[in-house]
Amino acid sequence: MGQHIHLNTARMQCIGAWLAKPEGRPKGGIVVAQEIFGVNAHIRAVAEGFAARGYTAIAPAFFDHLESGVELGYDEAGTARGRALAGELDFQRAIEDVASAAESIASSGRVGVVGYCWGGTVALLAAQRLGMPAVSYYGARNVRFLDQPLRAPAMFHFGERDGSIPAEAVERQRQAYPQAEVYIYPAGHAFNRDVDPHVYDRASAELALQRTLAFFDRHLAGA
Image (cartoon, one colour):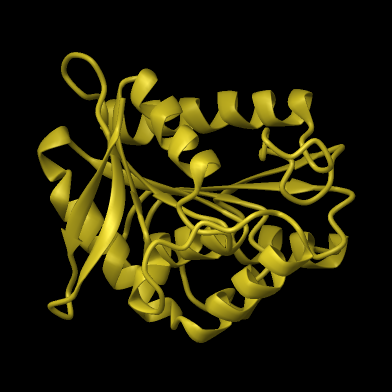
């Protein structure tokens, strides 16, 4: 079972985070970058899932820089508020938080990052700017940053029915990063969000997780 902790960040500010530890010796560490809805029950469960598979996982509460303890629902109001917060928070601040989170669990071994939606772009930036192995799930904002080279292995998951990420955007990422693994699933946006029946696609989520775990086993546990 994980726990809420305080995480000291690069700008001498403290934010919250959810820390989940495995039983026994960790295979490595994973920073979990949230969706626009904060470190809510779903993101905490994602971190717990990686811990159950042998990794120390930490989910920084990025939005604490703006508003403490953000946990939003998936309704229209929650989506609007999440988008506003994501628009207000500079990506560079989030990357600094990822670096702080990775440092806090460095004793677990090599550390990578996985991110979902808004956090998917945070994961991409971590591979570019921090050299962290990264898995990016349906990062709709990725296309803004394709001029920056990868400094670490990366994997991308997209849903072919994702209205926020057209096929042309996926192809641009393939072309920008031919060395990366890019997968497309018969699903829409947020297909990994198992608490939301409107978007969850079990078959796609399970296959993406299988590939994600294999990626981390290669680049973290096997490094």
